[in-house]
Amino acid sequence: MKNVLALYGSPREHSNSALLLDYFVTAFRENHPDCRIVGKKLQSMHINWCKSCNMCKRIGQGCVQKDDMAILYPLVTGADLIVLASPVYWWGISAQTKTFVDRLYALDTSCFAGKKLVLLITGADEETGIQYRLIQQQFKEICDYLKMNFVGYVAASADEDRPVSKHERILHTVRELAISV
Ligand SMILES: Cc1cc2nc3c(=O)[nH]c(=O)nc-3n(C[C@H](O)[C@H](O)[C@H](O)COP(=O)(O)O)c2cc1C
Image (cartoon, rainbow, N blue to C red; front, side):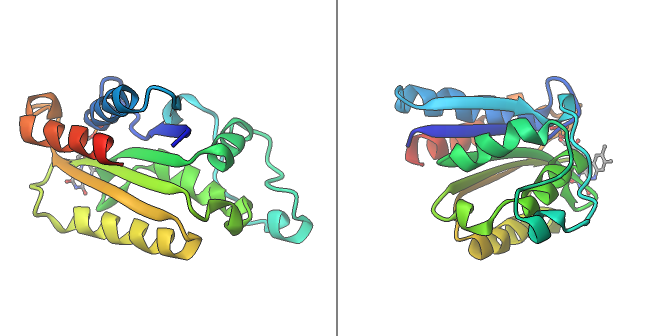
């Protein structure tokens, strides 16, 4: 494992999903000292929506939009492992995370083959809530389509009053995942 791209999908500073991602990154780095980890906060980047202009497919030279996806595209194509952290928003991922995922449409699907994906999700509902399974299934389908390996998924119940920092079991699970990936 060489290159890791860690993406923070919450708009909030010190968010629950960011804490999970920080935990993952710290444990991963301890166990893979030679890896290169790049972390990006999607909220602080200028990323337009996919406009479905299909120029990426017609011309075949990537996305015609000029924004911060120009920074993320090479990080995605060069990554061996992508770790996405997002809050649950309306039974799905945050708009920041979804907008990033939509823009991956501009890349040739073959560039994703063999890459690993880890998903870290936080929502206010109990961990038995259907939103966590919906998101897991969505990314399982995406990974199957792109021939990526969906190697890890952690869903945590947390919000501002019940921060994930107090959720020892989940933090342990994230750490174990980072060690095993
Ligand atoms: C717009 C919005 C929609 C939300 N929708 C859901 C939801 O459908 N299910 C859920 O469990 N939590 C929902 N939540 C709660 C957040 O997922 C929860 O507070 C989470 O821990 C926030 O993660 P963060 O701290 O990483 O931003 C929603 C919060 C917001 C602001």
